[in-house]
Length: 486
Image 1 (cartoon, rainbow, N blue to C red):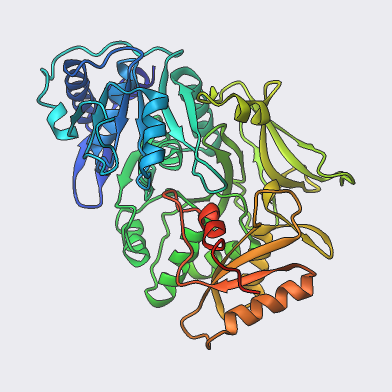
Image 2 (cartoon, rainbow, N blue to C red; image 1 turned 90 degrees about the vertical axis):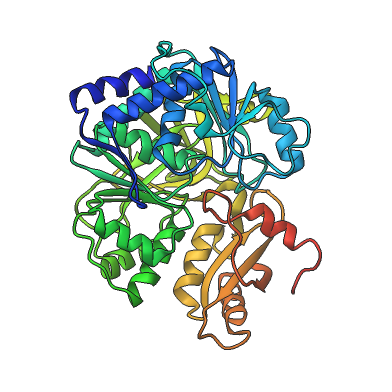
């Protein structure tokens, strides 16, 4: 179903650019379909058929990577990317869970003898005749299992069937107003949902142009790509936009074509939106979703209102569940429902019981309902810090640190253990280059005292991040295990 839908779009505009890279590689819609057929034939020649699982590892950020995903879907098979930072236990767990018949991409140093037969992506094209017909995709076939980011705990596999995925993407494309003339730039690895859902298939299902760049591209160079390719839509995390703002202050650039700069993540601060408007001259649009659910909320309002929340996208309903023993009417846990969502966590009944209840998706995020009925995401329930004024979501605390601590370039606040309303907070802070020694830690401690928050503060050279780009909170907790700074 996924491949057939895009093949139908390609039939109407075969010579239009479909996927290109910032290195200069260009693939039209007709060429993308041909590459998909060639890769599908190669996969079939290697024994991949309906119901089989294929592992992908470190595939290049190229049109062939996109064609590989489409070929797997057309064969009614399923692909599972191996996370770049997977260690031996994580890799063994992934292989045991998914039982793949083929490994596509470079070998993993921790795979040992447990990995299935391996082939490089380029070799798949020559493994079978390019003219071999592709099977017809099926809406009820699981075509991918992606890992959650692992930013708050152990990554889990999420299964998506083709039918719900295509319907959910098409509704979102219509909701956001993506057109054939749009250019979408993807700076994320194609192994994660942020890349495929907000960029790859949003572009292809709209007949638009997708531009791929290396995820390690420096911010100043990324700004140049945005201007050179006249990008109209991109999505990134708050930290990524903060990096672009910092780069633009030394290397100013005009981005007049960027009509839809989307920002995901659990919390987007008003200060970040204002900085984007002042420095980048762009109007940041908030979106909210997850690997498990898909896109849920968005704000495409053309009027810059930094305090405005997000509204449910087409086909999604939202409500607030009470939070704590003394619930506030407009503050609670965000609960979502949709008829186009994932199949849940693969072989994880305990996690499914907590997250998917009675047809609803319990996000685990604290949300505030504003006067106009929209929602503002404040942070995870497991990251709510105890303060003198009640529960304080950790992302809000980090926003306050950014506002009140000029010596702090960046911070990430976590609870010592994943628990609601913990008494302590751990703050890892990266000092600005111009800050005096110890100034960042002193300023953060002053903010904690002002808020009535008890905790520990430590200066770090850099804030650790997951492969998606989110702060790696479990790693921050583990780094505290050896010693804690009072």
